[in-house]
Length: 162
Image (cartoon, rainbow, N blue to C red; front, side, top):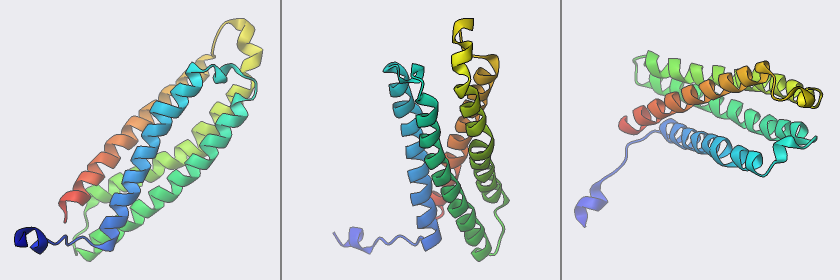
């Protein structure tokens, strides 16, 4: 029992903040992308006229949380790397990449998809989703995969730094 009680974690507050933020961000992204959106698609809500408004409201709120999480991760990576007296360029690059992905999702992809989604009723008789919407969905998916990979690498680095 003494061996267990003598173990102490030597994590800084910034490492803990990074771990918690990345864990929350990664889990909420996976829940949104793999639970909520497929559920809405299966139930047929995506064919409703008000889905674009509901989708924009969901993603507007989530994208703002992503921006906040990316700012916390970048700040904590800068502080961690600076206090260790050596700049961890890989970690800083990954956190900048996460911020860039959050900015692209917030200010480019989501508004573009919502704008195209509001016009989908005009294309309903044409027999499908426009090519540009599929291109935006593909871009969003690729950014999500990149975000999950970068978050996983940063989580692993922060966990091992203790």
